Each structure stands twice: as structure tokens, then as C-alpha cells.
Length: 338
Image (cartoon, rainbow, N blue to C red; front, side, top):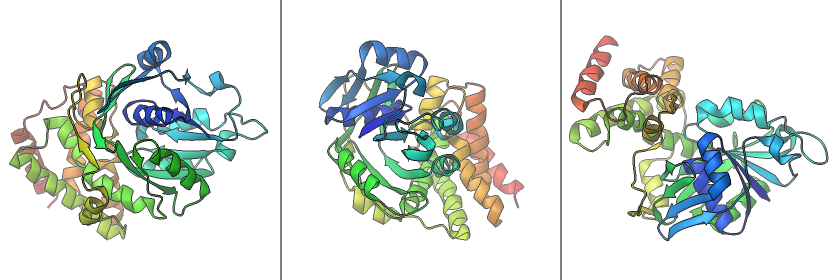
């Protein structure tokens, strides 16, 4: 199988680099300065064993590859807000022997949240969800890092909306030869919703900085409690904290990396890079949506969604809002829903 990594940023670049390092055929898809750096200098992957350079084919779209191969596996690793454009670009791509990528090829959605694979299923027949437990960083154009040890990450995967098949098992086997643990599960959404609850803190970190002092931690607990209340009201199952800890243990322990300091999570990185967009609409916004559908107030998640979107749109500095100011806004938001 050949892996086509659509969005070779932090997560996609690390997965592509690790697969290439274990001998698998990989094509990276990127844009702008990142595309140019990957093309000219290769993918530089900083991991606990050092900096690894992989000279891999790099394209900015399907036309550069010609016909796709019947054994291609598409890995969608763009942020959810960029999914529609990527899917509309790659879905019609022709496959050798007839048909299109959307009709014939498997698509693995390696993304935060739960909406990406639902968007994909409108166009692609064979969609797989992946629960991403992979601490990684886009360092600079052409350079990504992953500080996890002894494993780089844990990637639960399965068919969307449910089930497993031979393709999932083959991809999992390749990942497990590439510094990942990759359980194939029939209920991958249950793991993704559990990860969603953790990701509700992404916007909090992006707006105020590391969630470390007691005020920030207390606010995150309130934000997460809203999320749990919404999922319970909607009848949506999610893996418990204890179940997640039992699976993960100390398999992905972060270690210091030379030349690649660990910054914040994906939303913090979006603000730091000044991309102009952020994934809060599909994290905190998912909880707000479900809350409206099931009659559960979600003022804190709505507030964080609004603030994160504003920071991204206005290109404000990550972590620039004092926690005390956010606490004041949060208390006011809760009062206004009563």
C-alpha cells in the first residue's frame, strides 16, 4: 500500500515520517512554504532518537500524481475546517483501472473531533475514523516533531460509522511497525468522543496559555462537565478516563527534544502560526451544537468557541488573555443563561 498524507503538518507529517521510516511508501501533500521546504530539503522529523530526514515525494494536489493507484490509502490530516476543500480536491481524482478516489479508495480521517469523517462520508464510500493520541508539533516549514516515548502515539481506528475490516487491520499493522500502537475497534467513535472531551481545553490553552494554575484547571473542569452533560443527554457513549488511562499507561511519555521545544496543542499552534483559522467550531462548537439539539445549556463552551474564533480571525497572540479576565467572562456567560 502507498500512503498519501493529505495535510503533512504536525500530525500528518509525523505519521508519514514514521511510516516511511519503517519502509512504507509515502507521498506527502502540503502547500506554501511547507511544500517548498519538504520538496527541497525533505521531511525533517525530530523524535527522541534524534532528527530523521526522509526524502519523500511531495505534491500540492492530485494532478501532480497522475492517476492514483488502486492500493493507495488516503490519510486526511488537515484540520476539520479545511476538510471540505481537501475532499472536493481529492474525491474526483482518477484511479488507475477506472473510477475515482471517492468511489474506490479508503480514506482515514486522522483529525480531532468527530465531524471530519461525517463530512467525508458525503463524498467517499469507504471512510475510517481515527482517534488521535499523538503529541506533535509543527516546528517550522519542513520540520515536525513528536516527543512521545517509547511510542510516538496511539491511534485507535475503525470504520465510520462503526465496524472493522481487513483494510483497517492492514493499516493498523503498518502503523504498529512504525512506533505506534493502533488498536482496531468496532466503536472508534466512542474513543473519539472521549478525546473530544479532552480537546475542549484546546481553546482555553490557546486563549490564556498553559492550563496549569488552579483557576485555569477549575475552569477546564467546568467546561468538560458541560461536555459530559451534553453527551449523556444525547445518549452518546464515550470511553471513561479510567479506560483511557488503562490503554495508554506510560506508553507515550513526553521527553525533551533538542531544537524542538514542546509548545501547546493544535489550537495554540494555529494561533502561533497565524493561520487565521482554528478548529474550535468542531471541538467546543460540537458541544454547543449538541447542547442546542438536546436542550442542554453550554455557555462556557460557547464562550471558548467565540474567543478562539476571534483570536484566530484577528490574529491575536496565543495565550494573551489573563485567566482572571476569562474567569470573569465565564461567570458572566453562566449568569446570562439562567
